[in-house]
Amino acid sequence: MNPTQFHKRHPFGYVTILEVTVILVYLLAGTLAYLLNLSNIALYGLANFTLTLIVIIILTSNKLWHPIGFRAPKHRKDLLFFLVPLLPMLVNFIPGVEFKDPVYVSEVLAITLMVGFVEEGIFRGLMLNALKARGTWRAAITTALLFGLTHALNALTGKNLLDNFLQIGYATAIGFAFAALVLKKEILWPLVLIHTFTDFVNFIQKPGFTLSSSWQIAILAGLTTIFTAYGIYLLRHKTQASDSTTAMPISLHHV
Image (cartoon, rainbow, N blue to C red; front, side, top):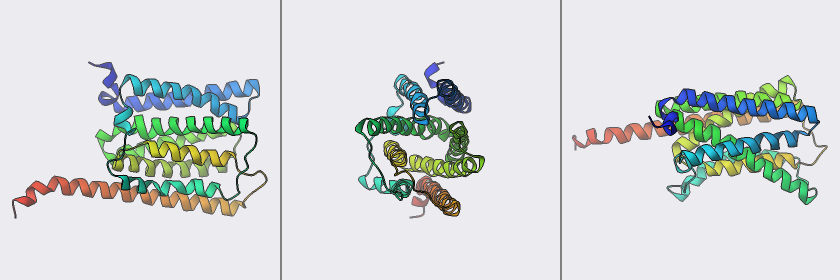
């Protein structure tokens, strides 16, 4: 047996190993950050630098860069489907942005690029690629749930229980829509860029701006609904297209 094909032979075991790896890396980084009194940015940087190296090694050793979606789109118009994922980034612009010193901006950009690459590479890349043979809906829902639950790790940064609960639901919906996009269009890199700049804008927002809790809940609920509906639309459309393609040879007999 080829050990590099473990993700094909044991997809759920493979996904479990990836999820446990993410959790352990964050827990270790969180512990180190606590002991050394490091900032949240340092915590994210430490965890995602480690995970970036792990993902690059897995993708390279298993020749998975192209299969998971680091390739050109089949049609340029396919990129239009990635406009909806831009919504969170646009929302993050509401408070306005503030560019501090170049060193800080460079650090934030580097960290958010790693976060975008790691989270998309693992959840919409490695996990989704391993599970999709077991069914697109199952793959999308499973990776979305894992993505949402992983965001419970934000408790390490001091967020309260309500904020965590809302973010878990929101992240699950985004994970579902993003997974549906990759399954339908078979490209991943646009989501890496979108994820990166969404987080980047969030980090460089102007300080002091706050929305009321009711507005925050309304925005999160609205985005959660939009992304859930978008994911369902994409997967239903993909399923119908697959069914019609499969049925085509039969219909030709009636012509």
